Image (cartoon, rainbow, N blue to C red; front, side, top):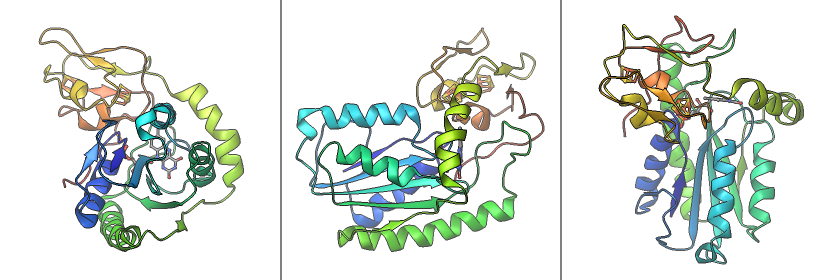
Length: 249
Ligand SMILES: Cc1cc2nc3c(=O)[nH]c(=O)nc-3n(C[C@H](O)[C@H](O)[C@H](O)COP(=O)(O)O)c2cc1C
Ligand code: SF4
Ligand code: SF4
């Protein structure tokens, strides 16, 4: 069984690849349907950690009696633009709270999706294509290890992981994760509803007449920004930085 959180779509792509390679029946979105004792957990790195919204979902999932004592092997795949800080430690301590100890974790570099700070920009097309090709190779390697239920910890913590995960991460959430600074250009918006459709937390209301309305429980993934066909959505530092769409599975 696979559970997956994805903003823009990179992680969903990776989860689908592993599902196909390991012959897992597919991605479940927190349904209680169970298919065996291997659990795959997929998420993108947000500010050198698990997206907060997904931490809550994971707790809900493991507190559900139907999911307790069910999994003998858990593997975790996180996608990131660069590095993950101490996320592997965070993941393990969360899972161990629920008695899970056979845990494998890997990080996979994928094209960058976060651009709303000065100096943060998308990968060039060449760099993004290279990352995806490398990711495909790595996912095949990990799929074989997963099928053998090997225990591995192959992550890129990057430099100064403690500072990133323990100091910068809380600051990032406090200062930069909210939807009040999104602006929709009324002249560009065609009311297609795509932003609402791709928002993984259903934070946007769209109607054929009004501009999209943000509902203030945003998780900061920027999927609405990247997927808007008219580039009509901007935040503070996104102007002129272009959009990214993940590979199709
Ligand atoms: C809010 C936010 C924070 C991010 N923080 C990090 C980070 O700390 N380290 C990193 O390497 N990539 C970071 N990224 C990049 C994503 O982890 C990466 O592009 C990932 O593949 C996106 O997956 P998704 O398309 O499934 O959302 C961040 C992206 C977003 C939107
Ligand atoms: S995706 Fe863009 S064009 Fe479509 S409704 Fe949202 S803001 Fe408007
Ligand atoms: S409103 Fe936009 S940035 Fe916020 S969670 Fe939804 S898609 Fe992501």
